[in-house]
Length: 385
Length: 163
Image (tube, rainbow over the protein chains, first blue to last red):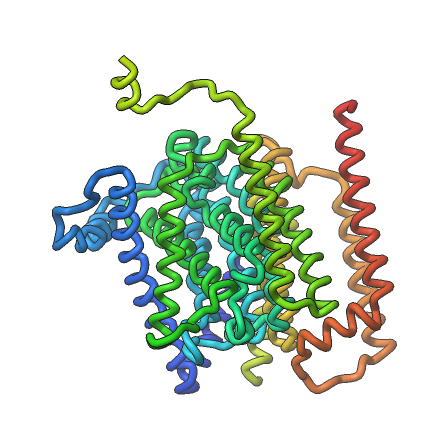
């Protein structure tokens, strides 16, 4: 055990030394580090804006004002929150497995930060324009699950344990539709390079050609980052924050940061894969890109304010019985469409028809079920008297 | 000593140390995490060989696989069992098997003297053509074998419950 640790530590040290040697060696490497730092600052700003937006938006949905006190319109509230979190006492419970407990937040955050290297924000505006960019992002986002498991197991808490087992089941399941839909888009574009995928959406964005794929990707993506209708692995009312239950202060903030960065990643991926990225008339490309991404973010918050949380069996059933088969059907349909060279509106019509049939089926099932409680608006009660 | 040689040495050390950790750590969860370290180092080796696709697929597949391994380790063991994980009588057999594989690999290298090719990155297009056109039949057979194993595992686990 000790020997293995020493050898692994030596290997890691060597790797760090190698990277620093590269950094010291070339100006290009220095520029890369600068780019990474700039990306971190940008992401931190995005997270602050998302926190403010979410609290304001949810507040409005629930007919209250949201944060109002700190700064105009409560704009400085997220800054105050961040300062509070960093200054808070960082408690280490007595029974935790220290190694896993302290490395887990890093293992969750680092991959979700490093994958932004391959995300293009405009034509040529990308840290590294990887040819396998889509695969790189999908592959790195898997590593974070190990971080969540380590947090849950390492914190020696039954709620943490239950939450992390839930997260393993949920995230590994929903990975399948995400990857299959991403594959479909890559097939349409004929490339895994994100810039080329955006450029390939020339006559019409893929949201129009593949509405079903967009629907599947958005749902599975939300489940993959644990946004509210699918947040059963850290549901407050069931597992009290799940894997994060024993964390406090700055370390909890790292989890929080990773979660918002991942939420923004889903919005950005939807923008890149389906909404035509930075394409649009008039405005500069980066502005179009951010506009679309924030539109999707707004949709995600709206989704959160509208739907109640799923039960775990419902969640697994939705993943394996609905999203996985549908994504495969879509993959096969897309390959037929590409092989026979149909016009794009043919694919669009088929995709829409499946989506409409799906919606109708769900509606019929929901309508057939008798509600256990009947909710009557107060106005109608009054008028009935 | 070129930089890539240094990187190779350290990645190999990381892979070996991770592998050693899998074998000798008393804690099943630690063993699974050491497995991740080892497999990640192998992904790094693939990167050094300029096979980016293989490296990314390695991370994608084994990241999920390690998660599943941890879950099984937690479901099938108790904390009290951890102390006894190393007390079993199979280790001479395991050692023999490991040495045999090492011997086979070393012998192959010595006998056949593999030719040294200059490093070059293979595009994903060529990879796809090779895999799905030239080697399509072995590929399909391999996936069929995996499918059979999957269904077999399902049937065996169902039979245990008497269904």
